[in-house]
Image (cartoon, rainbow, N blue to C red; front, side):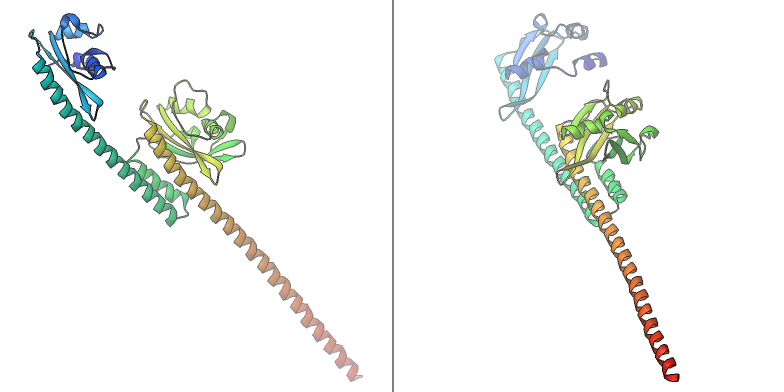
Length: 315
């Protein structure tokens, strides 16, 4: 077996680096001995393991390199063309299996994402309670996105306000209701760009980033909340892991943000309608009171006229 130290050093090879890197770059099987070993940094560890002869091949699928396979022996051995051809065939078989597994995972992930978005959409249609919708969203997100904290920040004129948040990391300085000047906030930067972004929080200039980084947050996805073409806020997903997010997660976060924006717009419409109804009820009540007062006055006038007439007839 190989030592843990060697495994750690040889775990990741760049294209063109080491036996697997050269095989992947050339798209053909290769063989060499220790005197030809192409990676000076790894060479001391290779010598320490006693490896002297090497053979490698790309893992191919539909003409595309999906990986590489490298073998080493502790006994000097000259690999023949038949050996190279056999390993190349094995590499192709492995490559197809790897690509099929990747495609299967990709399809499965997309199905999970669509299902989660559907459940979030259904929750939005079933409730005008933003807290209830947010709870459903957070629950669904846990199965499709890695995060330690997530928040919704809404635009308030010259500031952005923490409107809702969830996660294991509690940060009092960025609690619900906290307002941050838009010009100093990463949310403001996203709103100005009108586009989402993936960021590493180390050495960033924004107010909340410094607080998040001190609490162990390293990676952040931020995407705008857009309703009817208007930028109404920012949706943030935050993780303690470094460089954990990719373009795929960014696109998924934007799809979730679009659902959130719909929920917030529904809530605003409901509040506006409720306010209009209350105003209408107030006006109707005022009219009814005025009408009652006017009718009462008219009745009293009739009664007064009849009293005067009665007095005149009595004379």
